[in-house]
Amino acid sequence: MVSISLGVAVAAYGEARFDVKGVTLQLGAVAFEATRLVLIQILLTSKGINLNPITSLYYVAPCCLVFLFVPWVFVEYPVLRETSSFRFDFLVFGTNSLCAFALNLAVFLLVGKTSALTMNVAGVVKDWILIAFSWSVIKDAVTPINLFGYGIAFLGVAYYNHSKLQALKAKEAQKKSAAEKGDEEAGSLLMAEREASEKKDEEN
Image 1 (cartoon, rainbow, N blue to C red):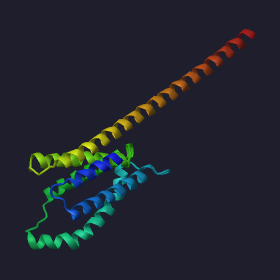
Image 2 (cartoon, one colour):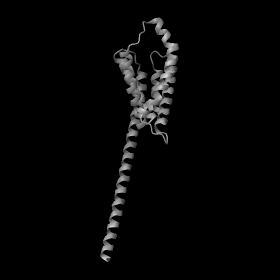
Image 3 (cartoon, rainbow, N blue to C red):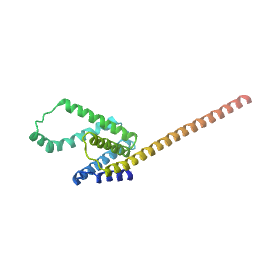
Image 4 (cartoon, rainbow, N blue to C red):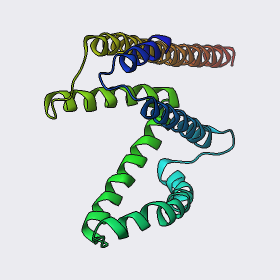
């Protein structure tokens, strides 16, 4: 995680059009997103509570609606009324809502099966895709320092994924070994019972 953070910091430092306000807002957004994912992980994996992604959305979605609707009404909606011919389009809002539902469902599923840290690392890959798109399609400027920072972050993500994969394989091998040991113990117990039964029949 240190190497990933260092790589992202180097890439931000090498930005051609560096803006302190923009970086501050981005860091704040990352901190809030990390907090949200950790709270989701706690919600999904707390002792005594077993919530699946659909159930979690059932509880979380109304809170999100309230906390997003209130600032939208007082901050964004007045600007929309003054600067554009805003009208409610059911098709646009419906498809956006469907995409948001699918995204949150996927996030809850991933966090429940892995961890909030894995989701944050996956977010770094998403950022790379956005940067590659802006570089190739929009022709946004990318400096050598940017590329160096992305390279460091990429190595960190690759190592993290490799470590997670190795840990998963070790866990599966441990489960398999425990199952085989249990089968052997059950077989030994069955053989002992069979021998005892045969010995009793011989005595009779």
